[in-house]
Image 1 (tube, rainbow, N blue to C red):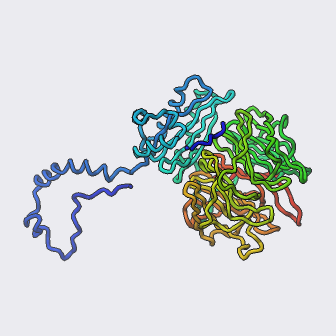
Image 2: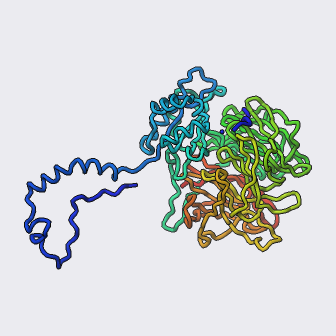
Image 3: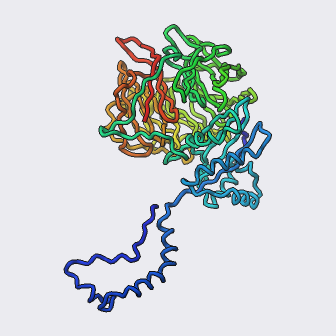
Length: 573
């Protein structure tokens, strides 16, 4: 469904009877004026305690209880299921898991509030501004909303956490279940995917903790049985219980095959090629919660694609999708899932493009992306991401080889563009390393303009917040980071730990080094243990799999020759 054009401590416990310390030179207690020159009798002390008991019991809770954030859960929207009460059941399951970590806004109070404000459950489930504002005024800080839908034989549950103060979506997650009866056993998995600034709603197992040498992580061998062949310029996407690798450039040309990686079993499974798109590289792949949509790319030198297909990793089947007549064939473009449709923007084909489109997989329909407002100029090799309702484009290089430090934000509710502020923006660059975080789009590293004094390698990390239109530079201790890379992977893992690994340290050298750090924690960058690490590479992919990081593919350089790689490794905390 397309969006419309309309707008959307631990407390201090007072020691009430603590006697102040008495210096050794002080007079004895018998001469203390408070006691009248005598030690107080036990009966008088007991009487004083009894009189003060009400005060103790009133004051103690105020100081001893740790203050928790208030959280509400709206009944989930229901689609394709006859029993609409399922939405309330899922909400209750979530509430039951969060009572220890949050102050919960009771469902009865929530229902009463909606009635008083003439609002519907659906207003809150859709996180409409007036509904979010109503519960914010009740002291609710976080709102969990979502949908339960039957798609084929699967039950898909999607959820997101909304900040009631800013109306910004802090995180999103999804699960699939074989049946409604199996949903209760999957709720923890769903909550572990909903990340906040201080971790998940339910903590993911395995935080990255440095050892005595200050190193983090442990490398584990990854089986190559049924693994994809060696390749570069491919896509690797988390799709529910699987990670799917598809397409790219192999030793003998472009590819139209791939493989599925079973996250729980940690093994590769074959992947059907029947109905798959034609061989290609530099395409995009987006997970909708049910399908992996592959679109665009290049299938030969200067021959580009504007077609694609959708893949169901559970049934291992492909279906064709409609070809957009108005959207020209291209590669090196961007594509994201907005929550309702796939958004495609930019890239190059016969020329550089600044246009895009929205694709609705339910109805197999394409819609041209509006150019309302201030859209970004055409570019490739840029950073992009979906943060809440905002699609962000920044950096890259334009058709005249100008390095850019400009960008724009597309509001998927208002359906319009606005310019990203230049204030405190990072230096112009192409190939920036980037990833979506709860605080906004993180941009780090990349290739700087060789014609300027700033051509030296530098991480210069910064986060762009689309809600406030501000850049926040991230401090780091450069003495901890021994090399700077282009083409590294950057992944948000458990408890907002970022893992950056691999890449190029010079035109002829790739690296197998990496670092991890806690988002927002200055000078806490830790090198990743190198024992049993995979070989040095660039152009690889990395995906977080709930309990470990999967790294696979890419290329390295030997005697001035590009060597494609068909292996990888698992990094455990």
